[in-house]
Length: 199
Image (cartoon, rainbow, N blue to C red; front, side, top):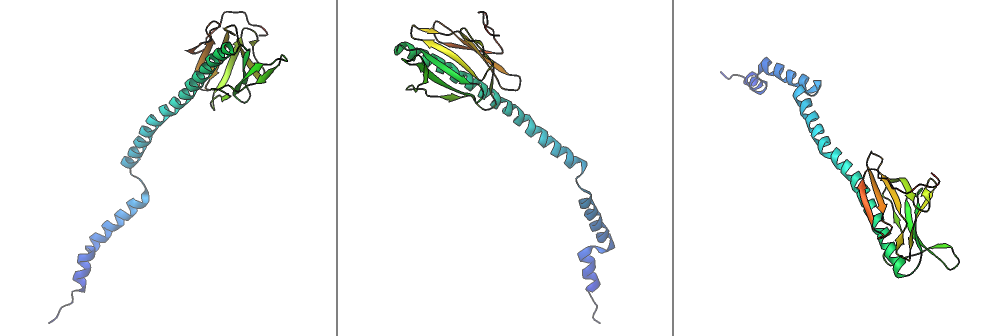
């Protein structure tokens, strides 16, 4: 006499009532969210990522600060040599509001006119870097929107101190040597010895 296998198939497919209960438990666990172990793993990954990323962001700021200081230093030394070679008074002008700096030379009319030199026409301070302090022998402390460093044809550079700030507690000082036109770079805020005018 033939027998029906429908019940047997159903029992094998679902494991009977026990299989249904197990499936329901898995469904409830999936709906409840992450387990404690999964949360710990995610937090660890985020912490690990932050540990590698944050120092690199700090390095970027320091890189900009050092790069700006190096470029300004090379520019002053270069213009010093140009002033001597062409027997003219050269002035490096800093627009403190925009961060731009460019050279100007003294014309026959006694006025400083913007000048393009073979290796330098203008520059710009990197984004996020500001001039915290600007002091020179002739001009004293600058507090306006413009500041200057003069370079004379007799082989004399105006003694000056320029302090750059990255906005995150790091500063770099540039000190112009009046006899050589070279610029010394120091970490932190340096000081110069001559008396300030207009401070």
